[in-house]
Length: 528
Ligand code: CFN
Ligand code: HCA
Image (cartoon, rainbow, N blue to C red; front, side, top):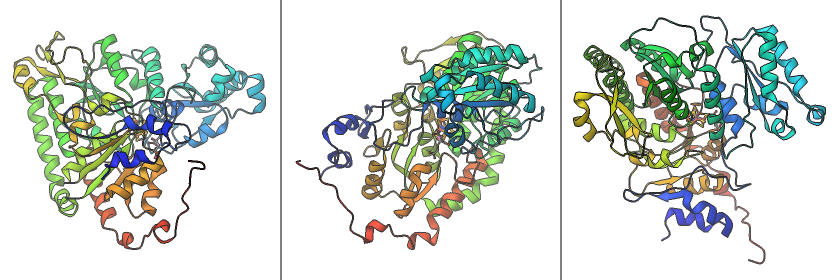
């Protein structure tokens, strides 16, 4: 009998077969190369977004005290308006501009004669009305095609108005997915934002939280736990963020990286430029949260902090343990398929595992090979708590992506057990026989539901309703539907409750997909 991969591939014409065959992998043994971060087959109905979505929507979108202007026809601004559930509330400067969508609303005449004057006018008007802390301008496809110089407009506006204006050339067509937009945003941050802050008194254990966008309030739950332990959170990139806090990222001692795809570039650049060390963490799932907190405490190496961390873990866990276990009882043994952007399809396996749910298929929309296959952990040794003198012990000399920091005396011992799962790629948490699909499309989604029959399909708005009409529960892992937070201790409990409700709703006895009752039209290749 053909395996699942072959069954999918059989349905494709030769050219598509050739393109897709290395994006689908049935896992076996240690070495499972997968094709990723490649251009999508045109017309195949991918769930990916564009470069503008990654820059404007994902990385810049959650900053609350800037005016974020979309330079382009109205559609791009409109469709990226309030769809991502990145929550915010006004900070000390009273500004929360997240509910607004600013756009130059380019018309045909702007495309023909150029849109720079309209952009300059839009900046003047927005600054006059809203008094933002900065103006960020993002480009959509036509802007690059007609050659509007948004950098020059930004520089002139900054001079004219005395407010920082930064342009992001993130035209949608650049790169192969939203991943290109993340990179463009990160580059401009390092060039124009990091290191421009006013001196501030630093508390104990100052940290940056990178790659946490406060979807459904995740960042608030993570910050609650870290504040309780005693960390000084310098800034969050970019959930509920104030640009003035972001300017001080260079003053932290450690950057923790929650999203392992969209912001790893900036972590590395801040380390190179300012010496701020970074480590990957994962606050999704109880095991992920506890190990992340313990690793952070180990980085600072202060016995008081280590003890306080254990105390908070014990307290927080005790508060949710009984309820969490009750949900687990009702959920264990179920199967899930996970398909999200570039990070969560791995992170959520850890939370599902806490609930006894096994992941039988997982994939990313735009992850890179290392997000799947992982790399060996590279530990750095901290000489002592006060010293900035870092010495490294190399596990894999050539691979400097996954690293963490530990006190020197622990180095040798810990390096042996350093394979902490969430520092590795997605495959580390999967088993032989599980399937991984990169850049899943709608045809493959339908095949997956029909052949593998997962109990739950975790994905996004574009796939959700196909699954549900087919009788399979679908929870959105981008927006959490209308729920959240899902991070940290309280988030894990919210997630368990939502999945339990979803799985056990009587709705499933009432749903029957139309194609189960009526004959479907089947296409035939003429002359084939
Ligand atoms: S919040 Fe993040 S966690 S930033 Fe990224 S890779 Fe998207 S918007 Mo959707 S939910 Fe998703 Fe990740 Fe990082 Fe979100 S898995 S696709 S670009 N993502
Ligand atoms: C994006 C944003 C998105 C889309 C979500 C979805 C998000 O890709 O531009 O497809 O359900 O999280 O809002 O990933």
